Length: 67
Image 1: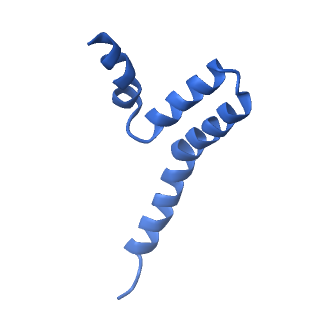
Image 2 (image 1 turned 90 degrees about the vertical axis):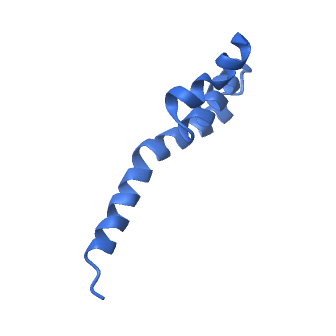
């Protein structure tokens, strides 16, 4: 039971997008694959900073579109 909770914890704490990326980052660094860990870290940065920026721009364009 505790193993299931530990396995699901990143998804519950960090959310459905960053949870799997953080888990992949952790396992990659733990296994010594630092390059792959960097790819996961880049994915986290893109989700945390890039996604809100793109959505804000798109919502602004849609809000000011003239029919």
